[in-house]
Length: 76
Image 1: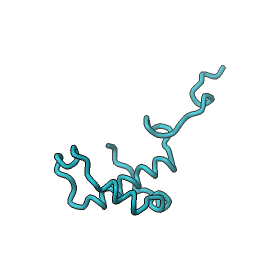
Image 2: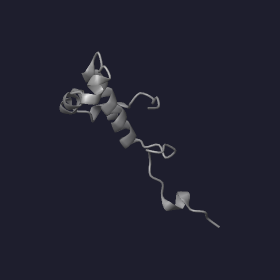
Image 3: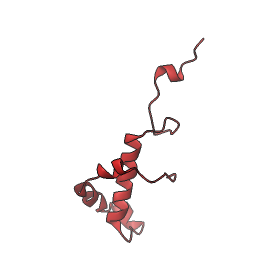
């Protein structure tokens, strides 16, 4: 996963305690990979980064923003 700038305060504000708690419950494949020393902190950062991409999509990122047809069409 590419390094991102720190999520904005707005992105952090959208991350709820419930979301962090449920995301911190490691999946079996995450447990077998060794997990994390602080799964709740890791979950908070994952969720905040995801929220940041939702709030401020990057049109140049393959998984980021959505371009309009005018931005992608060959114009005469």
